[in-house]
Length: 287
Image (cartoon, rainbow, N blue to C red; front, side, top):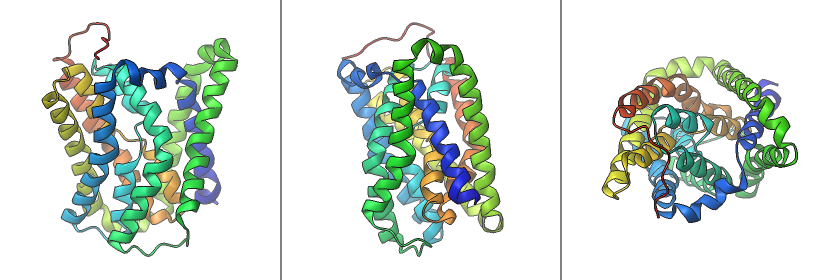
């Protein structure tokens, strides 16, 4: 009951709230800041998933847990990445744009990398599904609620602005419920594998932030833009990973659940450190 009903409903609710924070300008901004968005999405949609593949191999995770780590690495950025980017004095507009676009592209990237991971690691999952089934499930828990949230903001802008903070706090509470439910549903397996999963998830979190920041600086982006990209890679929308996993096989939700327990600590530490380097100036548009 928990994994089949509660988790998808909570995750859909979280995605609706994310949609409330987005506007069409967040998608149009890709034209205004093409270099930043292009480099950021390249990191998020290509480097992050393959980094997860490598870490899963390095840490010797079981096939099912390895698939879960790749699913996490392939998941889009989320509202928490936007918040931490703000706290780190990073380029919030870039962060929000990457979140918006990657959330839509998840309809393609999540099923793609999930299928590759299942084939590569030879995972034996509870549910017998095809690629069309994965796409449909990702669509139902990401694109549909995200679109509902954006539509609500467009149709009832004043009401949404007045109640957004309440909705955001509610979504944070739902996030906690999702993580607790995911952990509870596979508690024995989590505690049996907590060491390996924690190491793998921590490596993915820290390595993704470091690589994202490093590549961005090598590409001549400023530190505020590099901060946004690093946060987007380090703070995935783990609720999407948990939601997709819950609809397929709850065992592959374990890496995302464990990751959710500490990602704010590592990302928050990075945010506090890097905020000292980022000048508190208004966001700039770089072509």
